[in-house]
Length: 343
Image 1 (cartoon, rainbow, N blue to C red):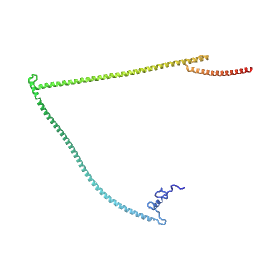
Image 2 (image 1 turned 30 degrees about the vertical axis):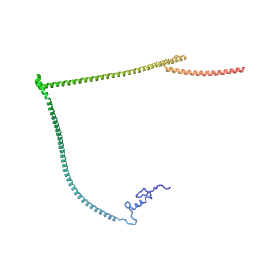
Image 3 (image 1 turned 180 degrees about the vertical axis):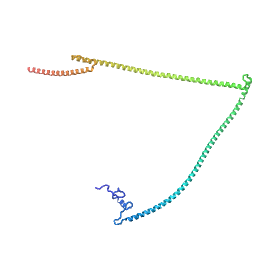
Image 4 (image 1 turned 60 degrees about the vertical axis):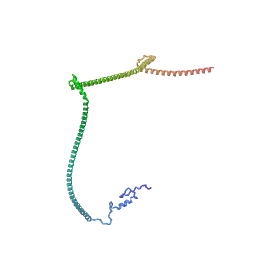
């Protein structure tokens, strides 16, 4: 049976995972190349002798020595050129370093000068702004003083008649010594009036504060009374609820007491009945009672045994009665048969 895929591989240089029919080209190509395939000499060709191999190696060694000397000379010339270039580079580096230091110092000086100039400009600008503000203030002050001067002149001109009236009052009056005395007394009266007005305002303010305090206290008292009334109503509701709950629980307690009393009565009756039954059974057996009234379990065990015994006796009696009835029936039948025969 032929295989679907051939598994035979060819160990050649190339694609080793190809099938033989596809690896022929790679095999031929690998045979033709010379880098990785060394062709053996023919069988009739003479091989190289030791002398030829020595001569060949000697020639190769001499060629390599000449190449080494040439490379050493080139290296020396290149090292000399490199040394000259390095000296030149060091010299250029020193010049550049010196130039860099000079330029850096110049830049620092320029930066310091720029900062000093900016600082001075800022100070001058601030001083200029301050002076401008002061000039504006002075101008406004001059304008205000000029306006005040004009108003004062108008006021003086307006109050000139009053000055004449005051002088006439001082001349005609014996109380005032001078115009200044009159003005001082008028000022005192005005100050007293101002003081009286101030005290009046203070008292009115105190009265208003007292009224507000009274209103506040009244409101607080009303709120307190209202809150107390609410608390009282709530307490009354709670009292009524508690009273209803108490009456309910009193009824439940009365029922519970009655139930307990009934239970105790039934219990006592049951105990009395058990003891009485025990005494009857003992009397039936013609024996004295051994157990007291409180020994219920023993009495019940005795009663149980006696009742079971009575049940067994009853069963035996029932059986004997059935036997007697059957025997009586058979005797009556036999008597009837004998009577018929006799007839």
